[in-house]
Length: 203
Image 1: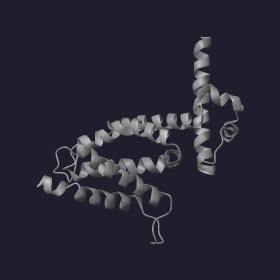
Image 2: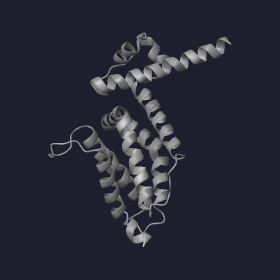
Image 3: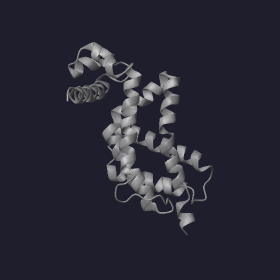
């Protein structure tokens, strides 16, 4: 019984540290956040951090693992299709990603910042995300593509990430307005669908 209680308490502390890290990243930015900022936000002793994470990068990697698990769970949601000849299938993926980015933007921006300053973290995060990239590549195999499916998948994910980052961060270029979710999803869907040749292959 005592072992079970300790495990539950440890899991709760780890979850509190992760949640505190996200709040602190949102306020200070990942690069400016210190471990003591995270433990203070969580109301924990500074030394408690190292019981769960070797360093700030290890915590961020754990947050990435949580994001990937969340993404894997979305595959079984209604409406998922792996046939990108169908515009609705493309739109479903765009909508899921846009809404995911809106919810998890703080972590996704932190991942970008960490990758810029730490090449080893960048490589590790790429390794962790490769299965998701290959998942998208698998959806493209029925199309007549302008390149290798994995290369095209990387183009798609990079475009979706950059597009979401610009507009959901309020840095939309020169239009003086926010981009409504529906318009963002429809515009990006049409662009990607035409780019991968969905209309030609469906015909």
